[in-house]
Image 1 (cartoon, rainbow, N blue to C red):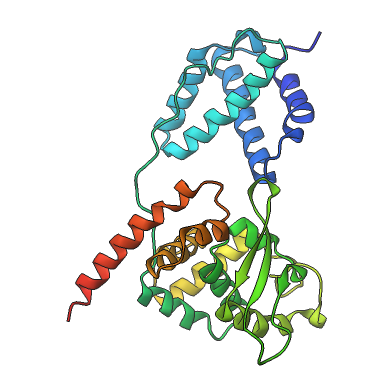
Image 2 (image 1 turned 90 degrees about the horizontal axis):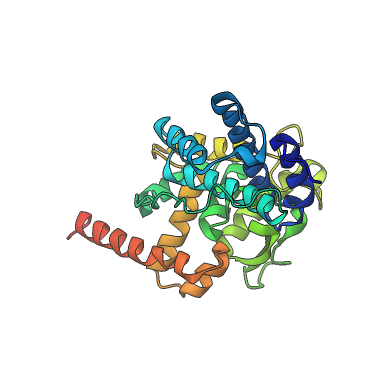
Length: 297
């Protein structure tokens, strides 16, 4: 009979369930971390160590305490999703009769609008990045494609296709591995191609393969390192509160504002639903209102 011990069940869940799901590596790590925290919480507060001892009130208490510590709604929703996955597996496997997460609703999504750079702000950011080929390539790549931070950090030189010679259309392509390990190909416009063409010769030994963004020691930049580079350039530019995700929102909002078809934006961003992309229509409208008011003749 399968073990009812929570720690042993969690190892079994990881080996026989989670690995078979098409989740991104970061999602799998996050789920396991949240589940392990909950198991430890049960042991410390209720002395519970078996799956059959877990009740709905334990889950509610855990999420309530998480909220009291200042966690945002998205964090609480993620923790609940992780617990639903774990206890759903135990229920399917017959170790428990009913999931203790059943009937617990996630918090409502926060309505705070994402930070979007104005045209003047992203122009200053580009100017600050101009002397540094790597920094310029990073900034332009985010602003011209809207890729995610995790996607940018995983890029390799061989994922980039640039125009072969001058005189040809200055259009390239970028192969990206997104959420759920889904592959998509994004157009690289002339600005992105120019920045990447200026950066690639700086690669050690002009390599044709390997990580795209590397440190001075030749190692691949981590997502945190890419984020630090963006933050440093934003500080030089005098533009506050800038992250890789800010640049993604900036790409989407300004691209929609300039009339790009929403389906094209959806494909570039890697959204599975057009409804997710459509939020940028209202953001673009608000941005236009603000700029026309601020720059009234």
